[in-house]
Length: 457
Image (cartoon, rainbow, N blue to C red; front, side, top):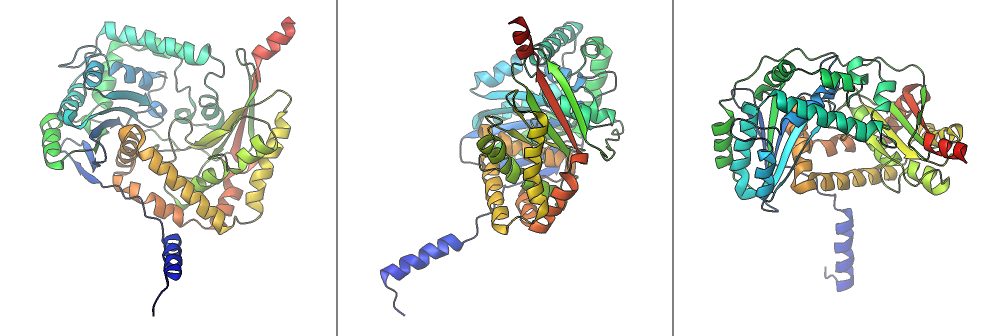
């Protein structure tokens, strides 16, 4: 049969529309050193950059009791010098080679990463191994960093408008288990009470290769990289790790509401947090899709209701593990939450009624399959953006987290498959079972600055 040009073009266009989207496939090489260090390599030659990330399985959720803020304090200590690098020389080494670096403390890990030109990779591996091998832990360094962290708490929480809202407020109110519910930033008296022996013991226990993951992502050849990792990390001794604390959270049986006055805020704020299903279950996959449908982007249902339709807020932000991570880089109980600043004329009961109207719509009838498919496309786009973040740091974060918590970084390539198995019926069931008032905590922040100003007038 002879095809005319017009028919041929139509057939090509139809085939292009019907073709299924390509799955995001991340190359993964995974192995362990005899001392227990987990190593993940993922080659990406799209730019002459590499990301080196070291994740330690100690976060503020499992820090010792009566030492709140200790995991965060130790994040600072890691930049105070090691066997061959003096104080702050690690930072100068990275920046002097044209790179960027950072570290952070999360629920279940503390991480350190550098994004550098590819030709400096061996130097960065040597530097990370040097501080894993031994820190320069002195009274002077400890006192200095206790002051830095104390000042950070004062500036970012105690003396700042909306300080700690809602990321400190929600876990403390929504959870019952101390490990999930204590002040993660740290009580000042606990931070100041840390001793030199505390710091040395903490380092020997938790900053060991058998409690860590090394992830390398970017433009490199595997053979020399494996040789360098063996050379610099293999001789670091493992530690005896304590038993992990029980993070089990009892089911929430009734709605929790909490109100506090922020003396520095000039407008009230509102936050809601719901407990979510266990990570990497079909129910969790459904919750990830509900997050995309309800909250992510200006086409989301809550944005449309609270911002466009009602004009309650200028924006609504949140997610699973918000604002400290994503739906996968944690291990243990977690909240799906969202928050916004609003005008005082918008009363909490009216705001809650608007939120409930959106959620009830998902509980009453199954979402059309095309809406679910649209959410999948949105999440796929978000993953592409996240994995390219900071020259590959987003990809390193996902790989390191799956290695740290699941001993399987290859799970990065299963996310899309798991999400695609979610049906409209399962989505509706999760909305009914988990997005109900008895499973949520509501934080209402009152604007003390506005009240003071009116009183002054």
